[in-house]
Amino acid sequence: MRKDIHPSNYRDVVFKDMSNDQITITKSAAPAKETIEIEGKEYPLIKMEISSSSHPFYTGKMKFVDSAGRVDKFNQRYKKKTK
Image (cartoon, rainbow, N blue to C red; front, side, top):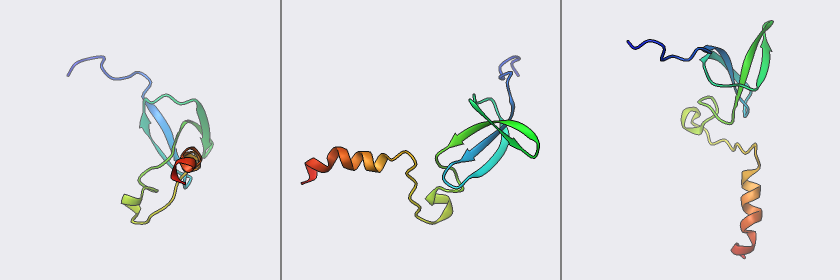
């Protein structure tokens, strides 16, 4: 194997699904701006809009997730054209 190809900041990171507040602790080198404390230990936090715990394909349920208001923005932008 080639040496020195792996990132040096490989550490435990918390990925949080913002639609259902599920957290997953795994190893990652992804940059994080925020931190979270879990069981007395502080981890870098990476927020996700959707994950396998909330995606309709994996859950088998249709669930509307619109945390950024994208649907409302779309409707406002194109409501004049639909009339």
